[in-house]
Image 1 (cartoon, rainbow, N blue to C red):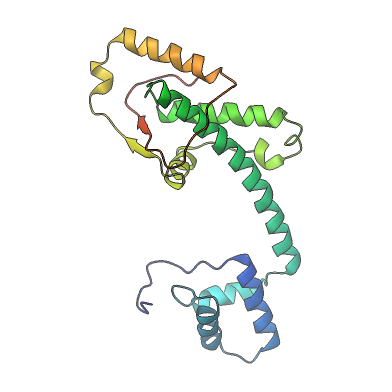
Image 2: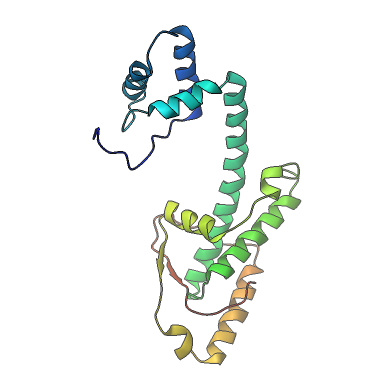
Amino acid sequence: MNKHDTTKATRIPREQKLVLCKRHSEYPKLSLRALNRWAGSAFKLPKNPSHATLLVLFEKPVTEDAVRANRGRKTNQYVCFGSIEHAFLLWINRCELLQMPVFTWATMRAKAEKIRSTLVLDATYVLDAKLKGMVFSDGWLQKLLERLGLKTRRVQGEATSTRAADVDEGRAALRMITSKKALPPFSLGMNLRIFTAWRLQPL
């Protein structure tokens, strides 16, 4: 552990914050220095939490009820994101199998929104406020692609050199693909080609 590395704050999960608050309550005479050393060792943190982090935590201690509520939110979030990601990957795989590498950020966000809208209508998710309130930003899409190991590649000059007829054909093919209900299985390990040069309108 680099004791002089202060470029990044230490993130402590809520469950560990609860344990730390309990220790502080049980041993109120322990100094902040002793507590941050204990936390770093007990939780195997990359570096010990700062005194400021502990002071903020102890001013508003984490409760067991808060931890349970947070676990419930994470469960709902996992179900929602997992379902969307699964359908999203099937769609990308379908386009890849048909050799239709015509993707833009706007197109992919629009497809994710279409999947979300479909899931909202499903009885399983009808009461899920998290799903209904989801917003698909460029940041969300970037993190999704990184988490699933999908590669992005920009083709310089592709948009200006592509014939208008080819672009129109690509648009029509993508609309046909997105209307399909039955999609083939996919592999998380596949190396997908996602091009961002063609200026397509969201489907």
